[in-house]
Length: 259
Image (cartoon, rainbow, N blue to C red; front, side, top):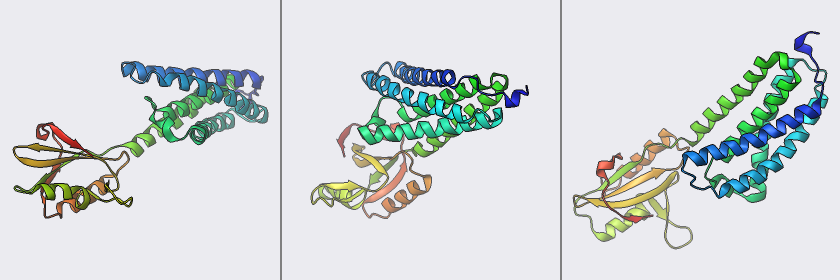
């Protein structure tokens, strides 16, 4: 029989292996990250195990249904479909859990989304390997390519530009310093009190060094360099600002106010 057209002999077996691999990869991925972080946030692991077990159950059903339908497919088509299926399942499962628990799951001490997507891709890829063992290279390629693309895409989407330091002019008054939050780095809040930082600014910390008032500005993950440059130009137009420069630890003294 031509190995490229070898048929899936046991969809339940492939589905079981895919589900087991998904569960093990999910738990192992989270555990490795926690170990690297000296077990900071280890309490999140219980929830990860629970929801990964639910996910593994769905992986079993999805791969079994896919295996039943792909009995007559070639190894090439089966591997590609399993690769795409793993990516779709990983993203879909993450969105489903977010819909149930809310977006706070993304605040876990490990990258839940990336771990589940990779686990799903490897799980579905394992099913393709079981179905067509003679074409294992193909199964590996159709598993690794989506993983690489996903990781690169996530890194690009969450990349954070370098911080900046805004230095005010010499002799600014206390009132002028306070106005920075509403007129330079933020705007008055629509709630009627307080202020909101400019869009794409994540945090601002104020500190004094050499009798100069400075503000360290950090940006939201995913902020593009073009947007960072626009914010710098907007801040530089303020008559209170002396200069804006890239953050360096040597500039940072004792923090006395965070907002």
